Image (cartoon, rainbow, N blue to C red):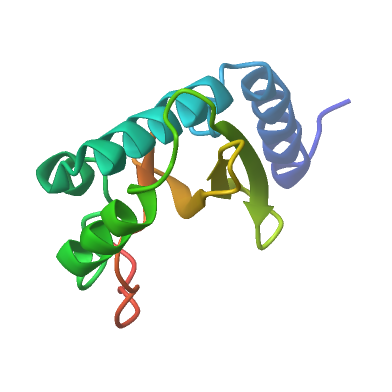
Length: 134
C-alpha cells in the first residue's frame, strides 16, 4: 500500500524531528557559563573596570557607560571575600536572570544577565527602541 504524498512527507518530517530532538541543544542557556559571567561582572565592577564591564555587556543597550558606572558604584562597599551570589529567573525566562551579590555586612549589588549569542552578557543601560528581526 502506498502512502499519499502528504502523509509520506509528514512521516519523514516527524522522523527528522525525532532524530534532531536528541541532538546537543547548544542554544540553551549554559548555567555554568552563567555563574562564570556573574563572577566576571562582579569582579570588574568591584575593580572599577568600566571597559571590562562594557566588554561583558549586551551591545544593543543604550546608555551602557552610565549603566557600567552605576554598577561600579553599587559594588564599592561589597566585601569581595564574604559575598554570596543568588540567581532569580527574570520574567520566568531561563535565558534571563537577575543576579544578586550580597555580603555578610548587608551590602549588595544586583544586575541582569541575558543569554545572547551563545553566551551570558550583562544588561547595562536601557533597552532602547525595539529591534527588527534579522
